[in-house]
Amino acid sequence: MLNIFLQAQPQGGGSSMMLIMMGVMFVGFYFLMIRPQMRKQKQEKTFQENLKVGSRVVLTSGLHGRIAQIQDDGFVIETLSGKLKFEKAAVSREFTDNRFGEKATKAAEKTVEKKEIETEKK
Image (cartoon, rainbow, N blue to C red; front, side, top):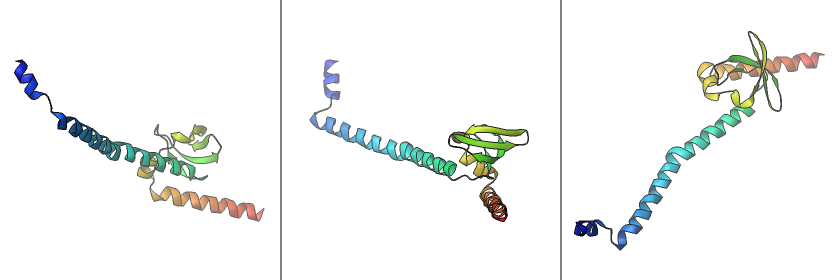
């Protein structure tokens, strides 16, 4: 029985092979899991920072609305039931793009242009 365990025990070259395999696994996890997640977080943050007044958004909770005000710590979202304040992190890029797509950004640009024209007339 002891003879079987001694034969299964790796020789000197096995430990370096084990380290190489562990390194390859770490690199694989980085490129398959960590890096895509970091890219997704960066896209989400830039999306939230580039939102303008009048943009139609969908929150992570599923609430649909239009941005009425932009504040330092969040957004005031106008819905059919009134105006509600939410954190910036509550706005979902994925849900908004799925629901509104390019229409949301074009509509936001038009409303901003209209408001600028109105302020110039006054």
